[in-house]
Length: 482
Image (cartoon, rainbow, N blue to C red; front, top):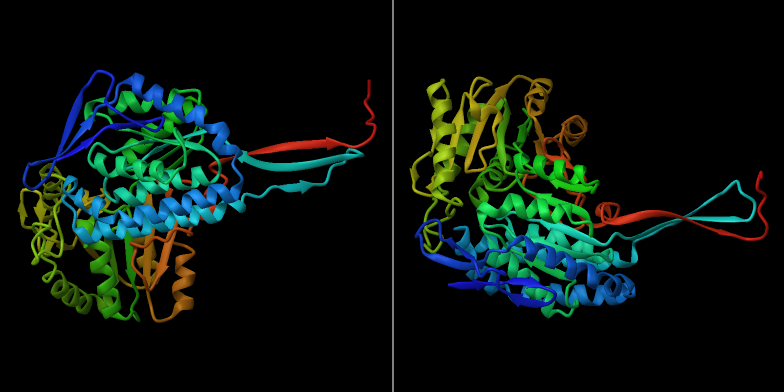
């Protein structure tokens, strides 16, 4: 069992009132981590520590910040086994956590490369002798709120670019992966960033609304970023707006994969299976809607069904398991209700759907329409629905018939045709002849519609985590009207 204290001002601390909560393995019920349950005063202390550390961190030369972030990246990757050992918090496969660590280390490396790329500009002025500049400067304390489903990637993403831009951070850990999020903070602390530069707060599930509100309301917090569900994202966005704090929100998705009539079906099937079922479909970019031209739909369904039959979900420790556990049994119950609703209204189960506690076998349904909840609601599980349409315009209409707009994919041998469609798909991300699930540290990552606003990743996030300021320098006399 892992003991998980708070990280405040470089110190490992219990909650002020001594309270803890437990995170249990969703399959076995065994306690994986015993976690400090922060009080409101602990939240205040974390922000105060970040604020105290800000002047020194912001004043560091950019190459010194780069050096420390690169050291953190190496230490993160070197401690991969520690992160994998905490995978029991979510029931995920070890290969998923290993991938998380590799991409998170790259996010720190990319952030390190950005420390010298924070540019301003000189702007011509109509005032004689006035030298006018637009400067980007650090904001102050940045609050990052990260989810459990890709715990190393998304928590690192919440803090890497804010640090590169000269800010200090408070990371509010997920209640479902607190040990992993705390370990990220410890890696950064051990890498020598400095006491208070990174602070990590964990809270009991029931305390989350109060803790989040307290953190956002704190005057020292100047920016907020959140990755998670659209429901909670709306709350975070509203709280941030109430306190006039800019927020970067990456929220839910219901990604479409379009298969045109000239597509390489074998390639499309491999991408669809990976996109729909990897990490049990618990990825914001997971492929939930397979929108296939009717001319090739029968062949596509047959090939995909055969592939899905090979993707057995089970105990992550078993050599026979390709997929692992859902986050908990209640997630299985929720997803099963979506499947049952669709089946009761006329959908057809092609393959899968067997539920045993938190283990749900990968599921493919056909005949889902707008009368069914699964047509619009994000399943966030190993469920994909196949819909047929005639021609590119009909495929596009189905793809855009969603409140979400995070990731999408199009398969076609005619890349010009696919690119023309990609520019009309309502999503922040679109991949041609690739899966909907894809991320690289340097790429702009964000959605539209109910999938949020703003972009993480490399240069795209600099504007979110710096303050643009107008500064002038007057040379010589200036004329005034009075």
